[in-house]
Image (cartoon, rainbow, N blue to C red; front, side):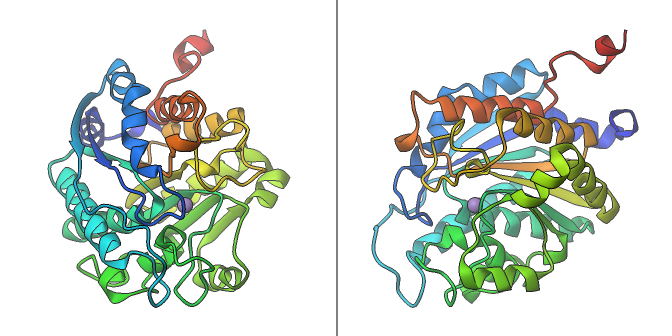
Length: 320
Ligand SMILES: [Mn+2]
C-alpha cells in the first residue's frame, strides 16, 4: 500500500501533533489523569522523531478536576465530561485543519466523544466520511439506561452514535457524529448484559476475542482493513490499552483477561501501518497507578512505533 500513498497523505503524515488530555473524569478508577505524562516519560515523542516524523508536543489541555461523585440521572460527572470533550474536540479539529496528524494521549476513553466530534466536524468540512477502528476489551456502548456504573468511559460509542445526553451526543455540528456502520471493533471480551443487545442492534462490526481465536489476528486484521479501505474516507484508530492482555499491560484500571498477546498486538499494529489507512490516533486509558515501573507505557510506545512504520527488518532488506 505504501507505494500507492499519495504525496498529499505522505506529507500529512510527516507532521504529528501530540495532545495531552490528563483526566480520569469518565472512569471508575482514578489515575488515568497521569497517562499523558507516563507516555512522555516512556519517550513517545523521541520514538516518532527517530522514525523520521516532525513531532510537536502541544502539552496538556486544562479542564476541570475530578469531583469523584456518584451518578446523577445515570451519569457521573456529566458537566466535567462535557468540558473535557469540548476541549478535545477543538484541539483535534485544529490539528486536522492545520494538516497535522493528531495523537491524543488520554485520559480515559470518554474523551473519544470529543475526538470523534472534532474528526466528524473536520470530515464534514472536507467532504469525507469518518470511520473508527476501536481496539478495546469493552464495547463502550452503554447508555444511562444500561450502565451498571454511570461511568461515561463505558458509553462513548453509544453517545457518538447519538444515544446519550444531548449535551454530549450533540458536541459535533451534526448528530449523530458517526454512523455506527462505520465503526469496527477488535478485541472485545467484556460486554454488559443489556449492552449486548444494543451492540448487536447498533450495526457495528465486532471482532470479539472468540472471532480472533477462530480466525487468528492476521485474518481478522486483513478483513478489518479491507473493509475500512472499501468504506473509504478518514480512518481514526482508537486504542484503549485494556485491548492488550493484562499479563503484558497491567497499567489500566479495567483489565480483562484473554486479550491479544504481545506478538498479536504487534501484528495488529504493523498491519494497520502497512495498510496506509490510519489518519488519526488516540492512546487511551493508560493508568500509571496500576502500572509496574512504567512498563505498560513503554509497551504502548513500542506499539505506537509499529503503527508508524517500525519493523524488525525493512521489507526491502527482508526481500534480499
Ligand atoms: Mn474503552
